[in-house]
Amino acid sequence: MSFFCLLQRALLVLLCLPLGAAVAQTLPVATPAPAPNLPWLEQQLRESVVLRRHNVGVCLTDAATGQQLFGQNEDRYFTPASTMKLFSLYAGLRMLPDSLPALRYVVRPDTLLFWGTGDPTLLHGDVPSRRALAFLQNRPEKLFYAEVPTVTAFGPGWSWDDYNYYFQPERGAFPVYGHTVRFYAKAGQPLPRVYPRFFKPLMEPAPAAAPNPTDDHVRRAPLENRFTVFPSAKNWVDETPFRTSPALLLQLLQDTLRRPVMQIPFRLRPQDAVYTLRGLPVDSLYRRMIRVSDNFLAEQLLLLCASTLSPDSLSSARVIKAMQANYLRSLPDRPIWVDGSGLSRLNLATPRTLTALLVRLHQEVEEPRLLSLLAAGGGQGTLRRRYRPVAGKPWLWGKTGTLTNNHNLVGYIRTKSGRLLAFSFLNNNIPGDDAPVRSEMEKILTQVRERL
Image 1: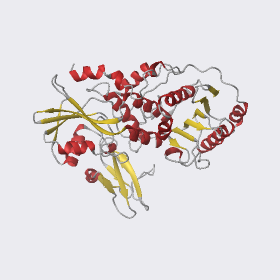
Image 2 (image 1 turned 180 degrees about the horizontal axis):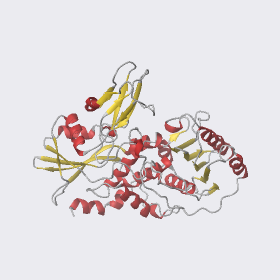
Image 3 (image 1 turned 90 degrees about the horizontal axis):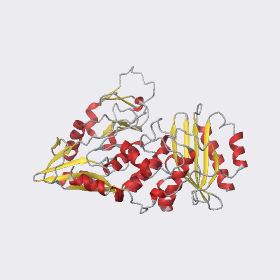
Image 4 (image 1 turned 135 degrees about the vertical axis):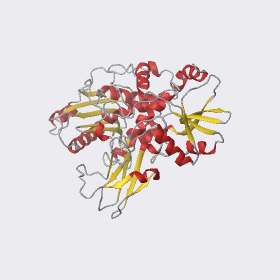
């Protein structure tokens, strides 16, 4: 075992405590006592015509004290969808320093050996960083890339036929361009502008009679990087994941760096000194991931956490296991946690466990920073059209979680009296359109703000 690996394991506890809260492992979040009765809230939920046809779970807790104020089916497991990103956020807060590790490298006489940490920001379209690019461009040594064993491209329980859509890019150790191709189309033009330009020769117009039952702008072949573009009478912008491979990564790196990059097996020598290139501040990733519910950033965040556990493999399952054992044991109900984004329907969590996690976050992260990472009602991201500010001030901050037939919201409410409440409002097995459910949730949570 290399010296670096031994040092990494010896410092694991320190790496996992960037919040400055060494007592977090023993921080009590006990199973809540029976909640006081809120008959008006119970009545609203019971009599709602919109909510009675599907499964509903609600938990309301004082964020400062952890006292549960209300519960309905709060101990039952639900499909949480993207609210699972809050667990990924907590993993990042526990395991990552203040800046992302962009890559790791070893310098040998005339060679620079580098490998990925899972950092998704290299030339990313929304959270872009060029630090790794500039570093590699300016090194005098020959460049050798080592592929670190990592998770599979798709997570457990993901829908295979979503491979074509922006919200399900493939995971990887050294992502570039966010693992997606961006298309910029103008009405009347046969083919759109494409970024990165590397993929331009792999794009073709759809035949005149080609069916397009899903009304897509672009369809990628399931197992290869061939992109078919359908005609449109309007301008559009779209994003499609590309199929990843070490060979394609080397091509993209060489095309971007304009210098040779060769591949070498990952093998550290005892005398190797391993260095880390620091990237963007972590909050830039957390904020984008939570506010717009970016699945790719959430998946890569777990790989970044895995890079702190071992230099020679990236395993999100290992991160989940470490978090369950060290930081989540005192939650009321053990979450069934299988991926970073919540795309998988194998994830399960109870309403009271989600609010207990919110209480934990509020105890360990300064409140202004914590609320700034979430989507603010009427402000940005997935809540920009709902929960409008009152007198110019937001009163709800949260994380949505939506899959077909499921819509959830977890977050904080600042009540009219000034109290901060943690809440979870989960809706599973909705038969049909979820828009009425969203409106009903807004009506009920507005009442919570007014009356508590």
